[in-house]
Image (cartoon, rainbow, N blue to C red; front, side, top):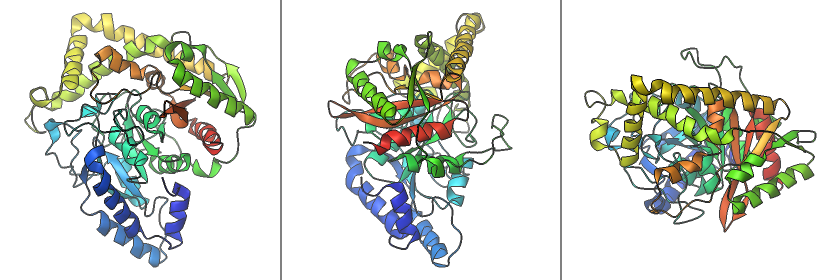
Length: 456
């Protein structure tokens, strides 16, 4: 994969590699590989000019931000001024963003150079990367298999070395799922830690913007760049500025790591074997491994989908063809239409208590169960997805597809943070360890992820 993030930054800062050269290398690699992989929907025509501006500032000795000269890919449901935010849908295929999302403003202020908009499952409705109206994304490290979704293009772009860091979104596992399948690092931050301004939502109470990177340092660097309070958002946590990247090498001696028997009950044995090996490595590094109870974990998936369906239906009512592109029901794919139809049904007055209210009760239950478990340990570790990625084009039922979210969606229900780091491989395909932390527990999550990454 070439240089790690810290080495790349060092080369840029020391003048060994210019920002312009870094961008040109990324564009050349995209041109060479992306016809097959389809990680990008659109490239930024101003990327080289923006890189030249960064180089000029560096030569003048001006203070530059943490991402100075790095190439950044953006999932196509985040607004970037002058580029299309299509959500990989024909509904918005001609929608050019008139403004920068808050996270984009922070990336630009830090010197990051946006190279383009990443492919994704249409309106983030998918777990495979196959529902995009611009074609499915291939998995660069397991060709012919799905990369995972819905941040499919973001994970694939990192895995293929097309850019240094990407921004994805995670509603029920959409950063962690593709990070696991593509063997990269992904972080789902605590609900409200990262501003949502400028995100075209799937389910507003679950959505979180977060980083995907080739290593833990890159993910930590991006997260500390985009995290922090936004006074314009009522759901934004009043959190201070954070610094994760300087604390990754502290080690994990005396860290209490929780595991649960529920994970093995829901996970294929081939995947679980890799995860068990990773837990043993954490123990060898000094962590104390503790069994925790998550007795109702299997109830999370259905509750998550009920709430998400209802919120997605509400979110899509603005796509009526009058202001934003075409009417969504007339041009969307099957999975988007399925979720709209289900959300319409669940939102009806006579069905609200029967479905939505019960799902909210499960959400409260998950918050309590994870809270109790995390009072006993510092993090909980387990598999990210319960099975290996299927081959592109395989016909799965909705239930089979939704099962990819079995182990990630509980985190979104609980509102806590989690990250994925490569634990090993099964049948030559990456398997990611999911490290789950407390509310605002990102520092500890990243430390544990880095500790495992360092012993590979």
